[in-house]
Amino acid sequence: MSTDKAKLIYADQEIELPVYEGTAGDHAIDITSLYSKHGLITYDPSLGNTGICQSSITYIDGDKGVLRYRGVPIEQFDRPHPNFIEVAWMLIFGRLPNKDELELFSRTLTNHELLHEGIRSQFQFLPAKAPPMAILSSMISTMACYYDEFLSPDDEPVFLEGVSRLISKIRTIAAFTYRRAMGLPYIYPDPALPYCSNFLHMMFSLPYKQYEVKPEIAKALNLVLILHADHEQNCSTSAVRVVCSSRANLFASVSAGVNALWGPLHGGANVKVMEMLDAIYRGNRKPQECIEAAKDKTNPFRLFGFGHRVYRNYDPRAKILKKAYERVCQIQKISDPLLDIARELEEAALNDDYFIERKLYPNVDFYSGILLRAIGIPTNMFTVMFAIGRLPGWIAQWKEQHENPTAKIIRPRQLYIGNPETDYVEIADRE
Ligand code: ACO
Image (spheres, rainbow, N blue to C red):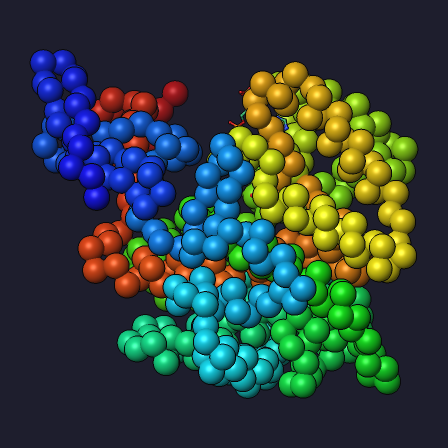
């Protein structure tokens, strides 16, 4: 913590405000007493410049394109055998797990991979073709009805049990959602398989034929999930924190996160990118037309997969995903015309003054979709894949918020611009 002070001069007042320093050298002015002492609020619509918490989970330097989980640069997870489960544990508990801890976590996940029959039967009350994100959020909310012992976990082993159920069952829910939409029988999880392979098995096996999970594909999926695992105070994570701040349980908070992620400006952008690339491929649109439409302020269209609230540089996740995708294509002997289109679009945008001036670069969603497609995941499941990946981050952020004894309910203020005091008028007297 810094001993620096900031000075704010307003009317005839000189107001001193404490300044804090983060471990990476960032500075933040503490304005919490501004209202109680001086009757002033700060105005920051969309919270673009407001720190809502102190956190030790994830660090981003948006200008340099740096992303670290618990201090570890994201590039270091692009290893020969990336392990999503290990990263999940690390994000939630603050350090890399030792061998015993990882084995216990892995065993606990396996023990909880089945859905409670009550939860499974809920699927039949939802339309098979319902949006997968709607199904996911409602199923996660439903979990609160079945696991009330985890609604207020009071020690770490209980918390780990609850968390394991969520991380394990989210992939079963996701796979069952897909199977039902396709009119295919559910494939139950195979306890012999690790996390990502088990998910692929539930997605693609047939009752009479086990899907053969290629190690490269499981590896690529592990990497995709790791790269999505946390991203500090983004829209969905803030939603999780806001709900948690009312002391709502983990299931309720994560379900809110799923809904926030669904939007096309956030996790839903991976679907929009694919639709855009597909439209170009089918000849319905030219790359330059997309660029022009994105620049046109009278057109709500955006170049999906481009731009970011925090990054003013290439999103480091997009760089890794692009390389991973090229590796998968080589191994799978895939030649995807959408990759050429994506490259062309990227080059055109990166050389266009509009994008240069605004420092708009590819974000994680630009290449995640085509990589997921190469893995075999259908487009309407892309945002669900993002949610599976982001779940450990939401849990870690929920835990941090929940365990902070000084945390208060998150309740922003507003600048009221409506009517001044106005009298109620009886209906007969209204114009
Ligand atoms: N296409 C065209 N113009 C863009 C784009 C884009 N993709 N992104 C930003 N801009 C423009 C804005 O119109 C604005 O222009 P202006 O200064 O002339 O008004 C300027 O760049 C700054 O952008 P903001 O909208 O202020 O940036 P903000 O931080 O609010 O939005 C966001 C970030 C939502 C990601 C935005 O860049 C966007 O809509 N991108 C496309 C959707 C997308 O890919 N979302 C995924 C983000 S990553 C994630 O959530 C996992």
